[in-house]
Amino acid sequence: MEQYKVYGYRWVVLAAYMYISALTQLYWLNFAAIDTYLEAHLNITAMSVGVLTLVFPLVQVLLTIPAGMIIDRKGFKYGVGIGALLTGVFAMFRLVNPGSYTILLVSQIGISMGQPFVLNGVTKLAMTWFPQKEEATAVGLGSLALFIGMMVALGATPILVETMGFQSMLLIYGIIGMVGVLLFYILVKSKPETAPREMAEEEEISNWAGIKTILKMRDFVILGFVALIGIGVFNGLATWLEKILNELHGIPMTDAGTIAAILILSGMLGCIIIPIVSDRVTKRKPFLLLASSVGALSIVFLMLGKGFALNMANGIVLGFFLISALPIMLTMSAEITGARFAGISVGYLQLMGNAAAVAIVPLMEVMRGATQHYTWPLAFLAILLVISFVLATQIRETMNR
Picture 1 (cartoon, rainbow, N blue to C red):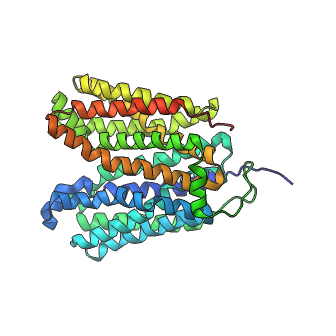
Picture 2 (picture 1 turned 30 degrees about the vertical axis):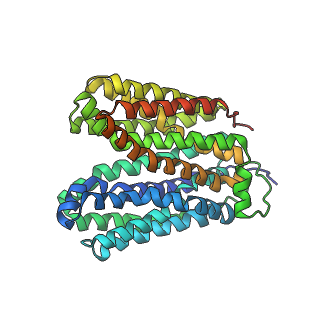
Picture 3 (picture 1 turned 90 degrees about the vertical axis):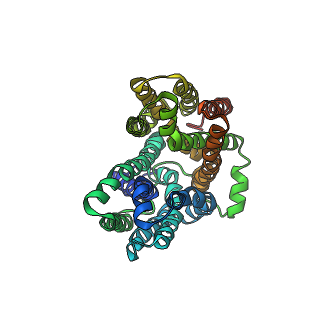
């Protein structure tokens, strides 16, 4: 009898997961892309529109650990299936009354409750279906789906609203959400008949005992602080980049938006290339160090660089190396804690990162208000990444541990 076996069907499972993962980010940012329209047509304030987006990181902080626990105890398909169902059902619920802010808010809360179940499942999927030599690649592709969803939300939503109307946009997004539910439950299997790798022997362990166990792992605790800084810095940049480029360098908002979009696209490319290279060279740590060091230097350049072309080039470098750190961090967390805690370990990293984002985004604006300049907020981000680099040097290599 064959001890281990790698199935081609693993790519089908990954593709179905990526579809659902992209949807969560599409629904997160779809209203942010049409905030002016919503203010005028629903007669609400800009802050009310912002709440439709802000519920996602807030709910992520609240539910990420419980979601990780469920994924670890019940398996990949069960846990992510909860998220897929919430995502599809509440995307359709928005059609009950598209003109009601209350309905839209309830729908966003429902979708955001599904998000942690989806996002925390990526390492469980990789360790259940993929051999270790493809682990970072699988996590990288799963992470890539997040940025595809973001790009579609920001690019397609305004066009759909302008050409077809607000309700038609919601209908289209609702339909693709329900298609995602059907595809996930039809195509995804809980696990392969034969494992693709050696798996740690499963033993019954309580949820909180699991948290205590992973928090006793030195390297994982350090990785948690690296994630806190990395995800927090990315959210700060993503939120204020257009204003930073406009105020520091006089770059028009349309050109600044182009730079922001290219930064995300470059990050998507990094999420494919860096994990593949990491798997090939059987190293994780160097790429974590590279993300922090290049990120810090790019932010310093963002403070000093002038002109559209130079900032575009800087955005490409920054996005490629900083965003690609996400799949590397998620892979390292699973390799440190093992398959048994793959869900809860990602949940913990998401908790740390989203909690930092909730703090860093407004703090940057407070610092800018106090100094009337974005130089100090950017210097703050650069210092955080230097701290992240120092912390990352203390983590032992996780590949083939």
